[in-house]
Image 1 (cartoon, rainbow, N blue to C red):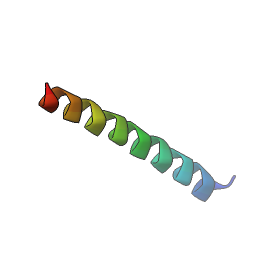
Image 2 (tube, rainbow, N blue to C red):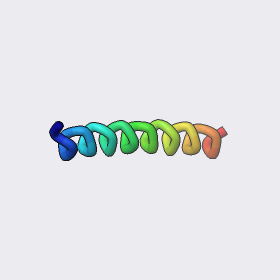
Image 3 (tube, one colour):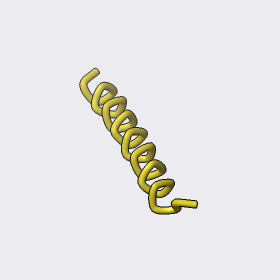
Length: 31
């Protein structure tokens, strides 16, 4: 098993989720 690849994919997913959350927060602040 390539754990480093899994960790990279997991981190990428978390980063994308964080980006979506920050975008949503920015939209809420703009309203």
